[in-house]
Length: 525
Image (cartoon, rainbow, N blue to C red; front, side, top):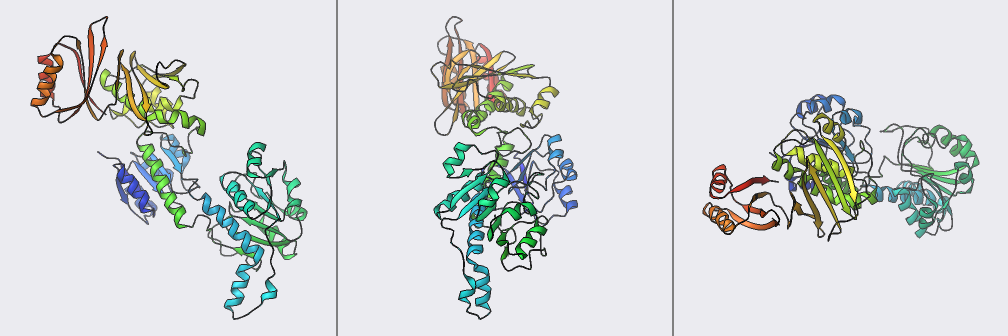
């Protein structure tokens, strides 16, 4: 049965279609009250919200099937992350969906402040022609101080550089090499940088350190006529003292898009014509909304499928360089885990993941999650996520370990999964990273498994392949792929067949009766 996804707020149709294309059952139920959401969430495996719906502890505890909660946007203030983590539920967001829109809104406010565009607009619509009243400033050769040189700050730097601005910045987490790439001169302290800037923009998260970061002392140290912009988080500029310095003429203009409490319809800044206020429009573009919908859909799908979710906020982050190398092997480990679970028929006490070749030395923790998830998923025991993998392994008495070795034989890299000594190994092939089994139970072979397979182990002798083919053919079962692995010293063979058709227990009994088999497995992936 397909996993079910509840979308509680408006989401781009493109995102909804992605979820359906993944095979999930999707319901859109808007404007639910908190009580209605608690009642509705029970059968759903994933919940997608924006900023209005509150995914409270009560909602999370009612969602007994929940595996993933997705926030189609950046902030997660409306999700009880602690409650979700206790339940092993992944909480993820789409933090990169609006970065271009936010950077462009920053430039928009900077230009509007410099050229007094809103004031001129109002004057014209009042039937006036006051050209001399709206003398503005050029951005060209002005110094822009950027506080926060992350994804949005770096995009602002790129755009400001195109205007010919001189760029300086403050970000304790940005390396000098990275700043140099952006054309930004780094400073070590806020006090060093504020007296140098003609324009200041902030792109910082809301933390204890950043709230009230700019107050009376910083404003007093700024250049006369400085222009301030904030499209990041409300409260980084102390609004009350900012209003005082605007009134005194020290601060020439300000462009503010975010507020400590929203909606914000009144503040000390509302009375000033040279303070341009917009109602949190940083992400309000068609493109950003589509990206938020499609990105969160992909992340939720990954979580439901047991893959790594790059933006999960309640798990240790996986560095991009690690994800690039190891991430493509997660589905392969899921496949091997599911295969070994069906081969064994019992939960193992020991599960070992061994990476070879180019993977050697990498952080293999996410591969452990994939292997454990595949091992348990076939039995429908539980959902395994990066959040709860360690706890699940302990619960079922499975000791999980990892190892690396440099030699991957003729392959660039391989991963081997051993469950109580029964081992399968694979590599990945092509741009689609298709998992390809390269050894199984000690037999060497190369085969791409499909959803329906038969595996035979027997003492090798002539005619057995023909017998298998005859029995399957008589039952209208088509063999799509076949590979044979040998153990010459034991005179045993392992045959891996991908098949199409309904393989019933009756057919399996016919195969067992017609052949002297050591083992026969019907594998469903």
